[in-house]
Amino acid sequence: MLIFIYGENDFLALGRLNQLKNKFVEKFGDFNLIELDVESSELKAQKLAGEVETVPFLSQKRMIVVKNLLKNLKADEQKEFVKIVKRIPSSTILVIYEKEEPDKRSALFKHLLKADRVFSCRELKGQSLISWIEQEVEKNRGKISRQATSRLAFISKGNLWRLSQEINKLVNYTYPQEIKIEDINLLVKEDVEAKAFDLVDSLSEKNLNKSMNILRNLLENGENELYLLTMIIYGFRNLTLVKYASESKKKTSKLKIHPFVFNKTKQQINRYKFCTLRRIYKRLLEVDEKIKKGLLEPTLALDLLVVDLCLGKI
Image (tube, rainbow, N blue to C red; front, side, top):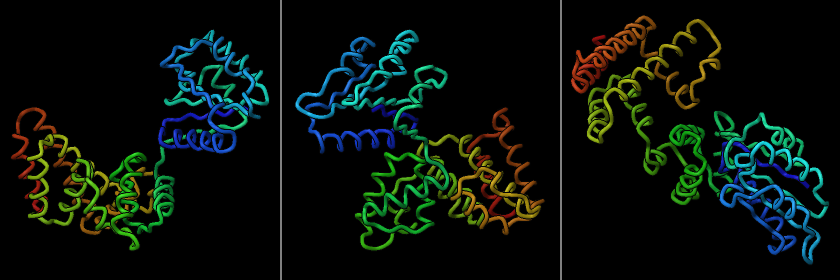
């Protein structure tokens, strides 16, 4: 049997590999489980052929796990390995695990796509990421609100390694209660982008004190002024796009905005007229250009922007 596991989502890929190994060990023991890493051992096709064709010792099956094969085998060795794959004995389970996204143009990759079982582990986004978080919380015997799920997906940027740890922490803290957005805000450390999004949120609320506190906190922690301005521009760009799509009855799915950001933005659009958003967006771009040309001091420019936006002076 030939099994091929690949894809940029190493959390899912490694999880699938460990699942297969555990099932094999549970049924046949670990004596006939062999793991080979082409990257670290510079394994050649001839040695691989010997391992694949070796009969199991005192067992019905033998599992060979070969890691990082496509990345490290030269073109002529890949052609040789195609021949090896074609003569796998029925007693051997050969698992090819690629830690990184392989070259899809290679003949070996195309052949491996014809394996008995193929697991393509892609990065999770949008609804697929939301569903994964809900399933993981349920697996940990917890419950989570939809709003909290969206917030967690936004903060994590789809990093399943981090999400797995955060979910475990949140379930332990809230059990048997449902995980709410307040729990996310309390226990999950936000990155700069998430904090900058909160700044845009407070600006749209015209909350001057809150906006200035968030800005001061970000600057005191060493965040770059131009990056923060870029995030503010991004936030008001989203407001402008969602407002336009809403008023013109265009399909909002084409905007390609994160679900959490979209839902928050949709709540904010009624605070602005479309002409006001266009004026604000134009002003933001002008400030960005002047800072880059050295015509404005960055910190002072941000302070003035926050005041003008909150007091409706733009």
